[in-house]
Amino acid sequence: MHSRFESPLDVNVHNGVVDACGPIDWAGDEDEAVVTVTISQRKGKAVGSGHSTKAVPKPDTMWEVDVEALPGMQQLKPGPARASGVICGLGSGIEMREFTWTQDIELK
Image 1: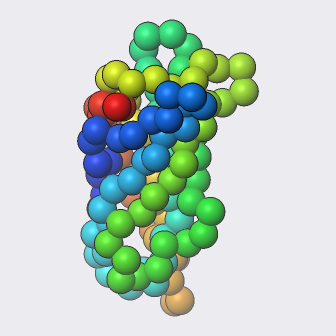
Image 2: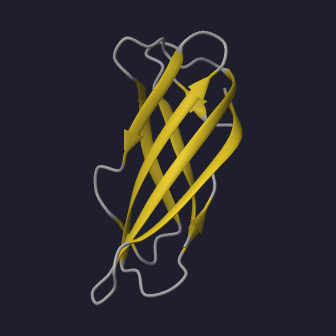
Image 3: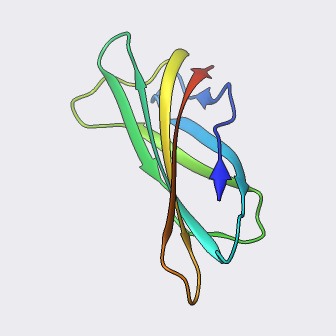
């Protein structure tokens, strides 16, 4: 299982919520996947996190996660950012498979 972030990603300038998304490439026996995302920006103390609110079923080819600023952190803003993702692939008869990646992205 593999993925990446679409870039640029949209950020709501009023509340700092990022609409994170990307393709999902199924690699084997997974039936569904759960996605967790963290985004940080060097300028200021801006860090946000989010996770899928429901499992992404196979054969969907895209995932989406709303990323919100963590308590006590600044809101995410348009500009360069660093994003990390974790996808946990689930299926009957297999152990959970985990895929992680980090990528430089742009928020607009």
